[in-house]
Length: 143
Length: 204
Image (cartoon, rainbow over all chains, first blue to last red; front, top):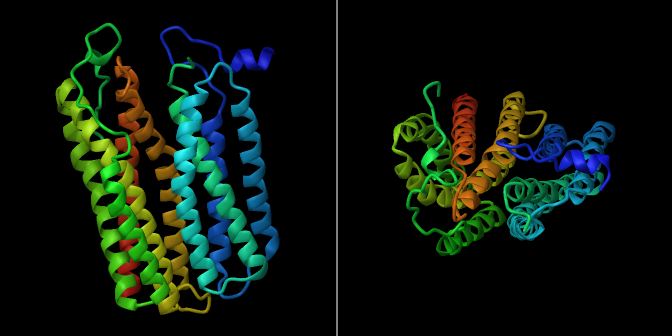
């Protein structure tokens, strides 16, 4: 365990165990993809300028990857609970994401616009399970 | 919201003698078929593009979403804060699993039907005279989504898992419940802004 890991898992007597800012990063990720979705939707029926939307989605994607890397380094951690909550939440929000994707495709959204919408949904459907699973597992006994 | 005080249920703290808790499922499995039926009906409404069905889902879903948010944040919250500790624990164990399924279902129904309705009526076209109001409603809903998904639902889940432990941490449950009730109140207040926008769209 290196110094960073030790900081991440430091036990504080009488208080909650210190954790890295996973929830905050997940919230920021959510904010970026929702902002991208609103930006794209606000330009309909014309395609939105690609730069701002792509930037927002890319920032969201990078934050998600960084967050996943941070979570993977937490030791000790209740990984069994994390995986269980992640799996079920991914199933639920995957269904919601699929429903939204169906709506976009049904409404004849095509090309770069559809690609950006789907990319936002992918980040969304991975970010929410990560946040929920971390929020539960952080309070569980690592076993 | 100012008088919401969900104190830590100290009696549930380790070593203090946990109050009796009802056995419960974190996700109420018996309700999943009902959720599936609602979602299938929503898909049918969207695929058939029937104005009445879209309006029904949007109005009913939005009304329930708004009403429940306001009721939980401003009525249930303050009452919960004044209940005895065992009563709070028992109420939470019965109430929170239902919210876990109900609220996401209402949210997706309202938003998906609302999006299709706006397309049907032309509100989402940037050339529409009321387009600015629609974008404003998207921003309000976006903020609500961030609060609900980022703060409210994780607190809901964490409370349920904590209540499942042999000896729940009372201080933690109190803190998480406080977050749940405050965020429900905030989203309820934002819902009022959405209602103002929606009623303006429907009447002008």
